[in-house]
Structures are given as C-alpha cells and as structure tokens.
Length: 604
Image (cartoon, rainbow, N blue to C red; front, side, top):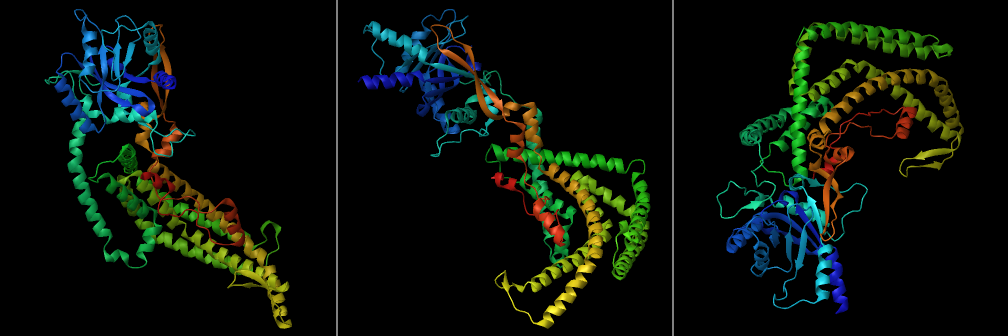
C-alpha cells in the first residue's frame, strides 16, 4: 500500500498541464482537451463557457473527435469568478459526476493574481459529508504544488511543424512519439475545434485562439479558387507537350543522344517534371510535401521573373545587336591567339628541344582546324543576330533556361578547342599505355586480360628487340606530345570551369528552397526545431507556471531538409581520381547530367 501511494505521489509530481494563453481570461466553463497518460500530461485546447447543456457538450466533443481523429474529452473545470458568480466553482466541481473521467482538473484563477490554483481529483472523489483529516488536507496542499502549468501560444503551435532536433536524441525505436511531438500533433490536428467563434449562433460558446474570429485572407481564398482551373489548364498543356516529346521522330538516333547532352533540353525536361508535380490534383499528404510544392511554385515564379527581366534588358537599347557584333571579332581574336600559341609550340617553347618532325605535323594539323573554324564562324556571322534574337526569347521560360542555352552556345563556340583536347589526349594516352606495356616487356611481365592481373612471361630475342626499338621511339616522342596535351588540356579546363559555374548557378536556382527560407525569415515559428521554457511565475500556494517558446529551425537545416531534388552537375570523380586521369591522358567529363541528386530521397 505504501509503495502504491509513493508511486501515485511521484506520478502527481510530473503532471504537466499545457494551457493556451488565449484562455487565461476566459469565462468560467469546462476544459476541453486531451490526456496523454503515458507522459502524465494534459493538453488544454479550449474552454466551453457556462451556460451549457451537458448533452450538447458530449455530442459536440464526439463530433470534433471524429473529425479531428483526436481523443478529445472534458479534462475538468475552469473557474474565473466574476461579480454574481460566487457559487460557480462548486457547481463546476459537481459536473465531474456527469462527464466520464479518470482525473478531473479543477483549475481556478483569481483576478489580480498571475498564478492558477489547481486541484486534481480522482475518478471516485470522497463524499462531501466525510470530514477529511489533517494529513489528507496536507496531501491536497502538496498536490496543488505538484501540477506544472506550461503556457503556450496556440496559434504558433497550431501552424508550426516540429522537426527532428539536429544532433540530438532520436525518436524511440518502438515508434512511440515523444511528449512534445504529441502536444504539437494534438494542437495541429484539432483544427475543427477552432472553427467555432463568438459570431456563431450555436448553443455552445468557447474560447480558443480563433474565438474572436477566424483567421483568413481574401487573397489566399481567391488564389485557392483560381488554382483549380489553372492547374487543369496546365495539366492539359503538359499532356500535349509530353505527347509531342514521345513521338517516334524524336527517338531516331542520334537525337536522344543530343537531347541528353544539351543543357537546355535537360533543363526543360526537369521543369516539365516539376510542373507535373505542381499541377497534380492529389493534395499534399503531409507538411513536408506541402512545403516542397510551395518551394517549386515560388522557385518557378522567381525563375520566370528573373528571365523576364533578362529578356527586357536584351531587347532594350538594341543590346542583342551589340552582342552579335562583338561575337565575330571575339572569335577572330581567340583564333589569332591560338595561332600564335601554335606557332610558339612549333618553335622552341621555353627553350625546350622538341622533335622537329612531329612538332611540325601536330602544329600544321591544329592550324588547319583553326582555319576551318574561322571559316565556319564567318559563314554564320550574317545569321548571328537572328540566332541571338530568337535565343533571347528563351529567357521568357526562365533564367535557368537562358543559362542552359548559354552553356550550350559556349560548348558549340568552343568545339574546336574540345577537338584539340581530344586529339592531344588520345595521342598522349596511346603513348602512355604503350610505354607501360613495353616496360612490362623488359621485366618479363605481361597483362593478363582474363584475370585482370600482371603475370610472368618469357619473350624471345626478336620480341625484345622490337620492344626496345618501339620503347625508344615512344619515349623520345613523348615530350612533344605531352606539351601539346598539356596546353590544350589547360584550355579545356578553363572552358569547363566557366560551364561549371553556369551549372552550379542552375543547380542553386533549381534546388534552393525559397518558400521555406521565406518562412524561416518572416515566420520562424512555422519551422520548429524544438522548444525552450521560461519561468512565468512561482508564487507560494500556486503551481509553477512556465512559458513554452518555439526554437526556429536553423537556416542550414532548412536548406538540407527542404532542398529540391535536381539533376546533378557535380564532378563524378574525386580530386585524386581526376589527377590520375589527367596524368594518363583519359578523357574527363566533369560536368555531366545524371538522374537525380541525393536530396530526391527526402522527397518521400
């Protein structure tokens, strides 16, 4: 018996009542909320005012519980005596015999006092006529101090979403929710309970965060109504566009290969997939999906807005003609610089002694390519302004599409440098692998293709003689080839770096969660990482009162949680692997498009 009594006392010490600040000055009535028995807590959601009919209260609570799917009940009574309501407190206490309960909270407040007085009654309260002993009265006085009131702002908790705490304690493995998460879930799921305000003509009146009137915006309601026909029209347009793209004409080789390499086509496909998700008739299943859809919508609007600004600048003051007139002289200047570079390489660059014959062959070969490229640019020069004029219209589809088109134009205008890099890399790689194979021949080794390893092997004199001759030729020709390979690799890396900056900008615009960051700046309580408590009052004879404040989610956590999935344009290799490929002469494609980044896993 003593052990059971001790356990009951310990459980009473941890009883926490989460009380909304909007109900601090509510008229006397009944407390409606939810018990959380596993954590010995109670969440107060509203106060139903006197006068009322108990049968109406029961029916109303059952209706709200079925709509919100929260186990709502009458937690107890709330008393704020006014003039002429001297017997209200005893009347509300007697209501505990009407409503089924295991515990009954009898909370009262006096005007001019900050704290509340609370009595916790069990399911079988003692009769009134039985006189309590002094020990029982002392226990009741102690019981008042064991209740802790946690005041919270109901509107913020209702609209906020509690996120996992970064670098904190994870949720329990059995799937049970923590006390704080159950409190947030209870308040956010009790939306139907907050629809009744003082302007309703129903038989019941209540106090909660919307009791003075429902919070809403005419603009938001108009946008909701207009979004239905807009989404239907967008789905029709996307269906027609998808049908056109799936025609067999576009599946003829090499069109699929070209579509996969052009940044503008990849960006257009990515935007199409996002617009399909945005125009879907299925509502968001949870808070995360809603934020992601809002991020897609805001990102699309900002992208199109920036693209329209770019288009207005291009078509104002004849900027397109100025750019077109600058392209051909710029191409001639680059070609002249390349010719001077090749003439320098065909001589004695930096005093190095090169193989004269191979040097002349490679130099003339690359000079001929530059000559072909200059003729090609001059052939397109009359149409350059028209190409830029129609290409500038792509900015109306968004800044990202204009940047993708710029990346494709840079790739096409520098195609001759890419060819130089491929020629030099293939020739250099051939010599490196030839030298490594002949070096194994000198050591009596060979590469086993089937087992993918180096095995011992015996060679005759003719094989060793031919191997020595080839090794000597390749070794003395290697410096000349390596110099050409080094120069054109550096030129290629400069172009790759420029395209990499463009693709990183695309990735940033496509994936940055603008809506979530806007909430973090303007309404930080919407994205909650946790809570902190502050002592409000601790008066003698009354319970401890704490204020629960929301800790907003960190900006880095917001980006990591709500970043949109996008096609990857990041290097596929580490720096060590990239340096190895450059050393052996293998071709590198550091900025390639793959299916999706790792953030797509968070979408579900």
